[in-house]
Image 1 (tube, rainbow, N blue to C red):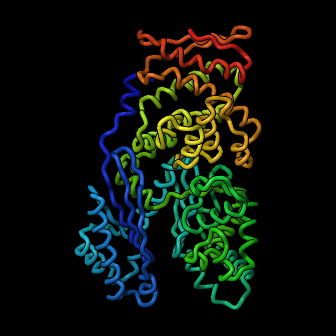
Image 2: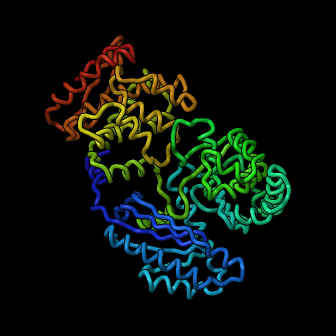
Length: 521
């Protein structure tokens, strides 16, 4: 990586604001985001107003004047909000469900006239592509099966090497099943069993290509309200240490624990469970039944929940249009740069620190004996080591810990995020807090603890060697000789005495962790 490469990677144009209006038969959502054209976006506010157009469509296929009037008021309000927030670009879309309304053309035209939003009516394939783009650009999953459960329908998308192979839209969703089964007099457990059996036999097993896929090769990804609700209940129930929905991995046991807890409850009791909103109480049983059918049909041992959805995919389309042609190659690196775009952190320095840290990781491999699985955590820690400064000057170590743990970093597991947070916040060995570490005992191991201490020293040296943030150290060569490590710096010809002096602060920690003396040249 040359100086020019680093400068190019960290040169960002000015930020702008974009608004995204999502119109479904059940709600109208306004998403406001910062964006850097052709680079990245970050959502900073969201508004959701419920509507009941789905009742009109299901009744006789016509959207009633009273419903149109209510929706017009909402889109006018959203337009005022866009003006108030000084939005520079606005885009709007309606989901394919509106095609079932016989007067949808006139309805959408009236909304456009009232609000000034140009509303695109999606085709089913548009929705498939948006869901896929939202997932593939925010998870590290080059081969997968996406199961997206909505109120009226379910979509299953099979992709490999970041190319869609097959997809199917199934006209059964959580609300559809609710209307078929929840009015019966059967007990709740029997209802859920019947719903699961119906969805498995009448839907999943009736889709030819699903039965031909070698599912062992693919990661399963759950998207939509049903998966989000199940994940939230699971995290609350097991006192999960991170309040993060995206990239949460649920095992079959995790799912069974939620299913067994919910299946015996009626709707009133379900609404009192932690993690279930009043809105989702009526459909959570249906979502559970559908997910159970998927697990049984494909013999799934675990799946990953994605908080990305159609909205995320549309934002990628509008803000980073290149992703419509080719997905992001390095999701983690992209996400880290996206984070640096919106915070007062020196992106060039972060990139140099990561470069030096990876050089040290390779040079000291004979000593630390760590596998490549730790590179991802080191990458996140290197880019966000100074993230505590977002909160205050001369930040406390816990500032970086909490900032990283609560950051939306795409492409990393929750374990990687925890490791990165401790690497960044424990650059002085005396600052490592075992009491903080044990909070995450279900996500980390004793081997991880040893790795964090070693990587924290490596990061501390890398930070010190770019302390003036000028990129003066261009390479490193480490020689292990007896009880010492000779670290030779390669420079661009300028004086690095300040960097070497800063790096000496790591000598005692180096000795403590690696058992050898460190000499800097």
